[in-house]
Length: 112
Image 1 (tube, rainbow, N blue to C red):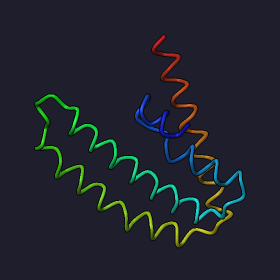
Image 2: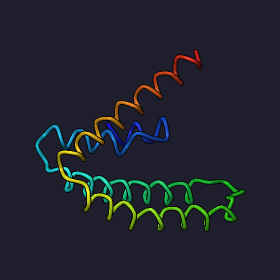
Image 3: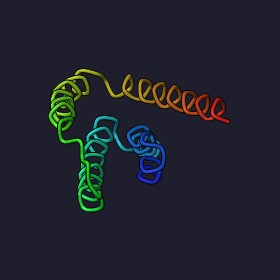
Image 4: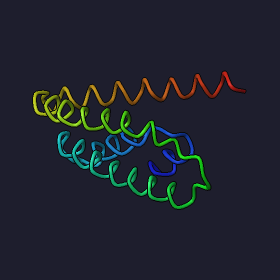
């Protein structure tokens, strides 16, 4: 479900997968770690498919900026997950998931 959502809308993978894992009883920090790994692998497959299927005009000049952003986010996310307690992490994930859902609904309704 999360991969289909990512493919169709471009976002929502992390909140969907992490929330689902928390609901099934997986500990919060493990859920975040598993989601990060799964999202990384999904994005890698997406990039490979894009490179294989793209006809031409790939904007390679944007690659360093995207890569730098991704690499810089890893230590920050790892440190923040280490510092936040599991209970607080559950509340933060629930809040962010709800906020993103409301944002998506608002965007969808405004587009109609």
